[in-house]
Length: 463
Image (cartoon, rainbow, N blue to C red; front, side):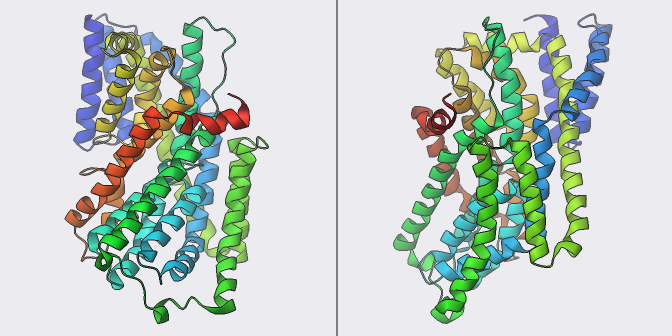
């Protein structure tokens, strides 16, 4: 291994060490990159002038039309949360399924799926479900660990369910990597990979994951009925035409908005960015219909700006990291290492998946997407038989798992911050284990049946 490549490895180690020490992600990526570029120039390992390409790359990030979907979907999700629409859904579905054994858990999964499709943000979904559903489940005798695990696992569906922010960012990075891989193979009219392809690819695995969660909760309700009791009839009040009217009022508008957004993308009527604008306007109209627009608009704009600023600052830092890493020959080293692994294509993909899973202990999903994917995806996509949609969905589901596995899964910390005092950190960690196992089983199934991810894109777009 050349000295420059060893320096590239040291650069990665320095970033991980700084992150574990608690330094801000974006500043760590940018600071370590600049320091390594200066030191590498002094040692004669690279030319510092390569950073002259950084402003143009940053400009390309800021003007990327695909990434414009991120603030639009963020705005949509935060508006639905602040306007109280999510609370209406939770209350209504809880009253509908409450009389069934395990009904509150089923309600949490169904509403969590709807919120995932409407918000696309894990943190917001976790806080909403944790504040509303978790105390209700405890009040009616649910096992603390089962309740905490159900809410935590359901919240992470926002990582895999379209229009998840993770899918948008992953689709953009994989699209660039797929074009680079085809050009490296001598294909000078490369086929594009779009965010819409990834949305379509993630839909069936996402729904399958929801079905597995529901089957688990139903099994627990029959095996351990004391862990998930039914609500008494007088507690849920789910009867008569009045409740039917409430159910329709709570469900129709959000479902129509979700159908309009996802339907326009999957049907090829609108790009994800255009569909994001539909979602943002629709969320504003729903908030106005509830009379909550005046109170919600300012906090929604502030929260959206904060989250989007954080994402793009990380992306700029990751752009600097990627530029310096490639200047040191790190990309060639990674390609050579993946090619030389035993097991060929399967061995390379399995190694990358394991590395991404382990990196989830110290890095956020956005950081992994911006730093790791641009390095490992091009050599993987040059290997025979690797479908970019399948690879993207596998990565997204893997990142989703990293969000929920102990001890450092971000979802667990989000839930800990809003959980009632009687729920301990130990309860959350133990409660999430069955769902992590379900998630890993889903990854194994997707590995052996890639058609779950590629079937719908092939049907819709003929890819």
